[in-house]
Image (cartoon, rainbow, N blue to C red; front, side):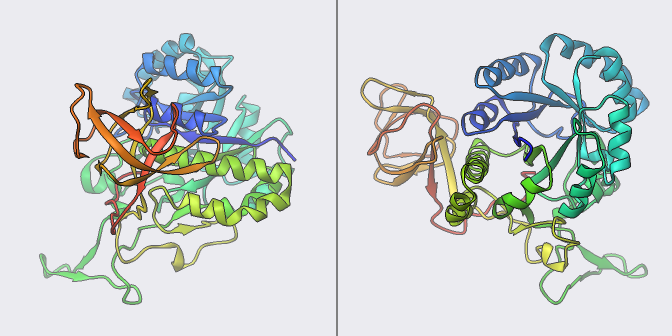
Length: 418
């Protein structure tokens, strides 16, 4: 069985560090240009350097996305950016455009190159093509079944790596190649500016009656025609491993540190448990499923892995997320008096019970005993996001632990985090 990498997205330095601490073997991120998440915070070159130093110190790798489908006007900038990366030295570049690939091979001849899912990699001939040009890894199209991936593995060189998405949002368009955003809003998804029109609610307008919006029904369940469920393969680790996949990829470069920690820790434990003893994996299966449901998600599906999906893959009623737990903050330091310092993300109050999420897999329930500001002022609650607070808890918390609490109501988020 091939050694499997767990690859987690990072939209910020905070998320990168969280992903690594909670079990990622590698993280992927975008610089300030030429990636497909222009709305993400993304990384400056100095932040990339810091992230690489942190990851390498913890035995993890960093991959940089440069996976736009480039126009003529982009090429000079791509070359300049790759020259900057020559000194920064990420572990690999993720590329989809052949022109960008050729620039990378010329400017960074020793850099590993991974071919993005945007290149529509659906057969072993495509894998062989990229291998012949020097690519180390190809990311499979989301539209492949496990049987197709097994066939690819059997027909490509042994040193060629397969990376496949195993968790996160699914695109309604083939391998992410979408024109809807450009058509409706003038923002090109293939150049990093997607407005996510697949999550919008649609009506039909008859040509001779403009302005009369008639609802579209599918079995009377609603009108969100393109709104896919999220991929989740936590219950199918054995099948993924046996298919010969080298890297298990999590989607979500615009997600929070809580998302990164939750998926990284859960998949890390599932992979390690199975390698230790398959029976241990099956014994812990319900725990994995419970934990994976504690981060923001849409309903789950297994996508194309077990055959072409049916209409059950879509969500017709709404475009909102399920959010069972709320992210409160990450422990940055612990004082001599036992207070934890956090940058507060969401509201919590004195006397509430919160959960301390630890990298080793433990979850500790703790009462909020005290809340203080940087000036030492006592607070009854913490309503202001991004405020630095010192909190005393009824259980021990350490640096890098995450604080979260159960949502008391239907606290679903509107779509937009993809």
